[in-house]
Length: 531
Image (tube, rainbow, N blue to C red; front, side, top):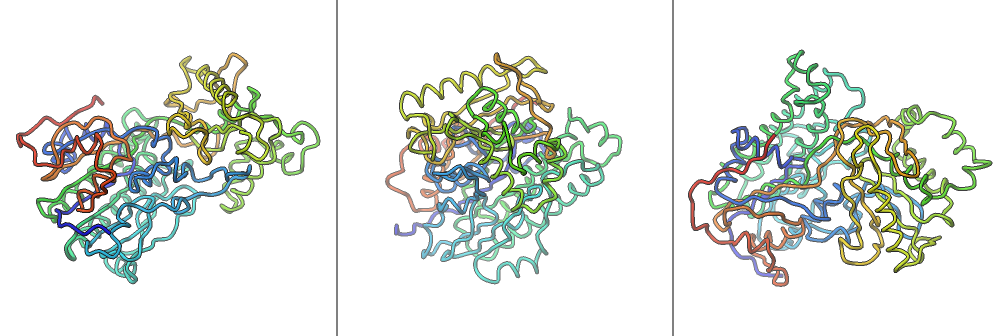
């Protein structure tokens, strides 16, 4: 263990799903004074790169410094290596720990509250609380709150009460239901801030990692009420506040950050980090499945052509929208079983070249690679590369029938992005679809039209794969950092808590931070972005 070195407190605020453009705009307009103060006296930058191919696993990469090509977590239901089975996946299954795990047995005191994709680690001095105020996915089980040391959960409940859960999306929700969810979010933000100030104020704090998820939840839940949204006029007419709800949630979080910063020593080093923004995008699950099947990459099983089993026959006898409504009434485990059964049973694996892994918005394509998949038919090497070229070419040909524009925004080939050859766990291609303010039910290819049915979970927003960072402190140089990878943060964090890793002390990000007092303390213009 590296000997502890006394350093100013390091404070890391994670604001999940906080859009970089909105942060800059609203900070410039005076709505976010705490974040604006960091921009005035510190540095800022964008977060990008292949680690942001999916929302799942990105915080794990940032807090651990371990690439998703190693930890393998990319979605909440993944292909089990060596099989054609799908299984539920969570960050804990990756077996990777955040950088503060290396403080075990030392004297540094930590305050870790809802750090995303992490769990409490025994043996640390201080307080750790997980899953207390996190995003409650629609019809998705969230792990219960946990804490270190023992008795902390009971103390939290005495001080601020039980956790407040807010669904990120509720199909067919009324304006009244959404207004109630908005009020709950503001209440939860205030309670979370009170809890954080109490935890930080109980003694010396060397490291604080605190996440707020309400900007993420608000963007999904109130997306249609924002300026330009499909339900904005309804919200304005009712005067319920939902037309500005996303901005006011950002403001509420900023207010709690400001209150907490007043409680911390002036010499603290502070980071504000968001990994994803928001954009118009409806589900695309059916499009990528139609792409793989209709273009001949994924061959249907014999049972789909003649003599299907009873379960498959029942599926095809029921309209997709009714089937989706029926599915949501089933227990989560049964839904997962049915999805996995359909995935496994409706494909002729011995004739399939590539297949889609079910996902809601980002699409994942996996090559049926010999030696990796149980019935792989594509040889590694030139045949694998040639097939990926062909699939990418076909994806780039897709045209949104409604707009006449390309349907695909970006394609990540993981073997190239992570420089490791065909991945053992990750999909071979991750596909980001073009943002559209409507459900893209049809896309055109030279070989025909691909159609997807409207799912019941038909959320109108998804994530923009680009994040934001602002940092300020006595050892942080001011200015624009440019684009930063999530993997570059851990080395800086370790250095700033006095436990540098000698093997990771180089890199553009560390050089940009400079880790020395700025030479010019004069005020600077806050970077802005057009609305």
